[in-house]
Amino acid sequence: MPIGSSGKTSSAVATAGPGRTTGPGGAIRTFKGTERALRADRIGTPGLLLSVLAASAPLMVVAGIMVTTYQVMGIVGQPLLFVALGVVMALFSVGYAEMSRHVHNAGAFYAYIARGLGGTVGAGASFVALVSYSIMQTGIYGMFGFEVSALLERYLEVSVAWWIPALLGVAVVGALGALKIDLNAKVLGVLLLLEVVMIVIFDLGFAARPGPQGLSLQAFDPATLGGAGLGTSLCFAVTGFVGFEQAPVYAEETSRPGTVVARVMFLTVGFVAVFFALSCWLIGVATGPDHVVAAAGEHGPGLIFALAEQRLGTLFTDVLHLFFVTGIFAAMLSCHNVVARYAFAMGREGLLPAPLGRTAKASGAPALGSLLQTVLALVVVTAFTVSDNKPAGDPTAPVIHLSAWAGNLGAFGVILLMATASVAVIVFFIRRGAGRAQAGRLLAAGLAALGLLAVLVYGVKDFDILVDAGEGSVLGWLLPSLIGVAAVIGLVHGRLLRARKPEVHARIGLGNEAFQLDKAAGAPAPGGAGAPTPQHKES
Image (tube, rainbow, N blue to C red):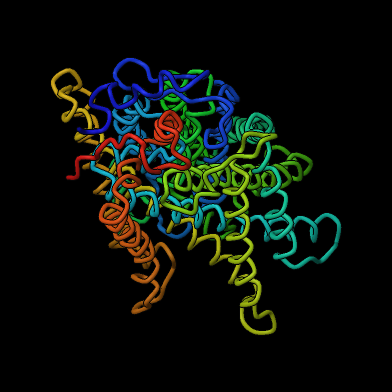
């Protein structure tokens, strides 16, 4: 029978002992105190909201991505892109949030896709998610190391190679990732609030002292979106939204996953769309819309700091530099937590080695999943360190490439996952016989899928521009193909599991529910002999 079509497949869970059980309609509840379940009731709406928003790295987006888009793409109407993408992301959230009420799994994207499109497709999505978020998180270390090095040079006159603070960042984030999620949420919350306060202050400063064209609304004119850089600008803007879709990853650790996750997603999308559109507009206001591209070209990533210093003084700018670095750190930690939970979910369901699917007894956190991401980050940063040929050429090139390439490639994979998840949501509810009742939500999911696919097509077409590859460079097709390779590996792995270990394949996307079925049947591990085997219906 299709997974989730009724509560019957979970009947064994209800008698599995103390803890949470399946609810009406087959909704999955977490189970406290088991080695294959994340610790429940660790985080509520405020903590989850702050953790998810931290992944969007507001100050990094405003001072880095927005200015770079103005500089490289020359799209004056960039604020309008955040509004348009906000609509697409809101449509996506309608179906995604409804799905979160029925599926509570740290695997989020791949779990949803598995429940809608089958275990094999879910396996493919799991590898895409793991690779995409790992690449994105690892890339941030390059920017972190470079900025910390510049900060030490500027204020302490101490010269430190970029890779030293980058490797220290890997160690600190790895240690925090193995601790309780509520502690992580507090760290992320403080850093995020500091970022937002700083942005609000210089936004108000820009509005109070606008450029030569005053509070012009020219940036919201659709005519300003013309030009060859539109597709690339869209992809850059998407990276500003990355983070809200991570809320379901923490579903097993929230107090009320059925309501908290959906609420946080909508709040995050609304905040990001409005806050980023306003901040982006005010950058143009501060310089004048007709001059913003030239100003970005002159100052580069330092544009925000130059504009802020003119209006708010040197002391504020110095503090802004510091919080820019802490904001980058918050983004690293938030992405790290997501990757650790994807690795945990995949280990629990047999897609990765089983030890990854166990949590630490003391913290209830996925310690081995955290360790895996720490090792991967260490390897990548070390590789770029070795390739940093300082005596020749631009010594910062490996750092810039690490951040830019990884960020764009990771965002590309997330867009692919979101489009696939939108389709999975539609199939999931139609198979449950809820197509008519959920018609509005399914329509929203369909529109979101079309919008996301359009962005994806633009991204593929202009990927050579995204990674700043020269004409004829293999990077234009080699880098995005890594996401395709991850998908193929996952699909093949899923197909092999279906043929050789059907009991494991049947549990892809079930998460903690599968573990409770095994426990009730006395099976030693997920997919063990004697465990009830609910079947995926493959598309």
